[in-house]
Length: 442
Ligand code: SAH
Ligand code: SF4
Ligand code: F3S
Image (cartoon, rainbow, N blue to C red; front, side):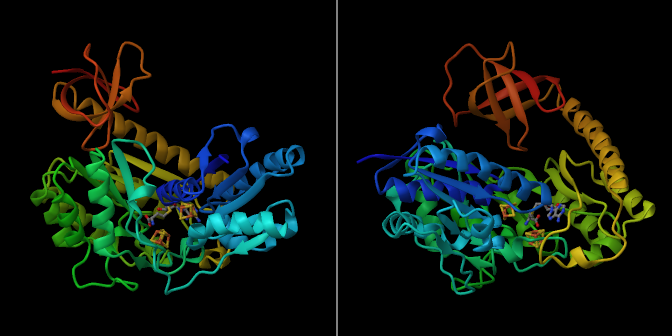
């Protein structure tokens, strides 16, 4: 009998992809996805714990599902992702109505955990994190996601232990997938009509260095192999750690035509003292040197970044150094956050915590300046012809279609013809708004 599955996903692309995998796995057991939690037989909440606020969001939604469970005792409520891994069985003490608590490495066991929860009528906990974990092989019957672009997870976990970050504790040790398995997945997706693939992991440029599938050729070799699949039009990746950005990877932006000219390179802070205390293992000079070299290889490359303001001990001068980085690099966009204490993360015990008002004030200044720079860079595109991949119908008034440039900018454009997602075409840029470009198909 067909049953219904509802999944709520918080957090990063790793979680988004994990949610797809869970839907695929339950799909094999005759579950269909619904967007109505009231109708679901199984609800999965895939949580994120990166900042206090993210974890709080997850906790507040469990309350909503508790009410659903009161109405429908048959409902199985499963919690996965980074909050589940972090809090484990303790979640059940606070919320005994949860049926399954499972960490990111245990998502593959979802069907058997659901069966066990129904059979035994008691909560199931699966939060082992093994350094010897092997990501199960890709099953072609289990593809799920949008038709023209997909994520492929190439590694799990993180070994970098940045002092503010919870990920090494929630996702465990860094483990790479085998090249053959990634290629099988990519080849299958392209044969199904997928035009764009994004390779994802917490630190993709150290791919191939850890786990059972350790190999001498690293991330650039993987990029070249995936790019060689006939029919793949765009290749992207995220996220990279600046310390692992090699000359060979930079060269890929010249050698691989389908590799999109966009690099997300989280800087976190412009101050060496702060970078050191964050355990980032690069200096701002070496970071900027890599930016210069990347742009020598690929002058049109768009850079985006992540920044934390108010890390413990951040002085006005440290923050000024971060503001200066915006001027030096001119990021197309940045994701910026107020520092937040996380369980197990070392910085939680660091002295000299920055006051909340100061963090808020610094964040507002940084975001205001970034918005100005982002708009200026967009305005510089006016008059240019750019290649756009169609995403679908546009929500912007007066424009029928929406798509993305290789640099990952949204373009809303007019074109009378009927277009299909994944189609590549040229658009002349006529106007720039804060979050998107506008133009006309040529
Ligand atoms: N592995 C990726 C992404 C990590 S999480 C990377 O290293 O770039 C995404 C971003 O969240 C980080 O880059 C960082 O800017 C931010 N972040 C992580 N932990 C945080 C914390 N405790 N407080 C505030 N921001 C945090
Ligand atoms: Fe967290 Fe640092 Fe790993 Fe990124 S590289 S996931 S910020 S520990
Ligand atoms: Fe959040 Fe875990 Fe991703 S903490 S950002 S869901 S790795």
